[in-house]
Image (cartoon, rainbow, N blue to C red; front, side, top):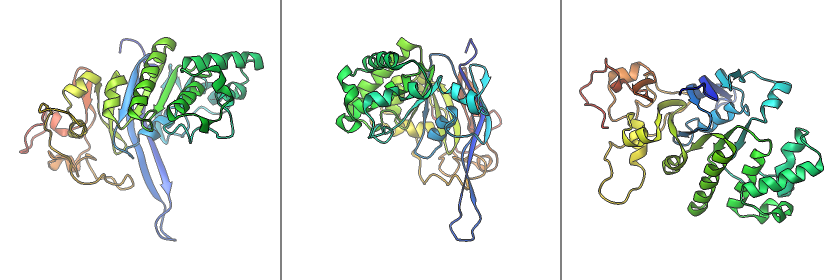
Length: 334
């Protein structure tokens, strides 16, 4: 990146404590996210992809400070925001917003669409009633809704329309950065395409920057400039969209790409992944993917691989990609 990134995350981690199974059992620590680092340039869309439970949503919520990080640093436009509180944190809310996965559960059923969209303006004391009504009409138009929709309640809308309301609410304070947390996964495929096109148009028109969280690589391929792949709380590969889909370097990324349904005989044949995802409360030593990796060798079980650059702008965390890696299992397929 030629200029300083808008968002820079370094060593981000989140540990939850939950009660043990028995009455007198000690509390258990669950390391949901550990050592996550990435940058997002102004106007860029970074995709964060991985299986359910890998820590994607936790990472996104820490970035916008809906969750408190346990460790690490979050720089937004050069300002450290991981420890902000009070008025400073409240002011930050204007620049960082989030769109949630399920539009029905994220919208108050007792409020009209107009009240939902203008609520951030009321909370932050932006404008008078006339100014807020004008802003409401503008936001409705931006997301493809009509003025009379403002008087309706969430249950009177379709799923796609409800997500448009959620997007309009997130845009109310004119933020510069949006976390889109599985923003289209609850929608029909045809509606997904409409919302994705809307998000692309809004990014261009409003100079927005996105962290796009999804488990769907097809969606990621459509909207993202770069992609970070997460496994069990860690980023295992990060690259431009074209590089990741053309030459995936980590075995887990290869397995994810192999899972995409394709028509015809040209589908790449990567080795399948077997077994279950380990528990985040008791991750395996060394590489966290070693219990499922078809290329595993002894070093993988003892030493945690660092995220290193394997090509310009392309980094992966795998011992087979480092010069000192020696194994009889063969090299990664590219």
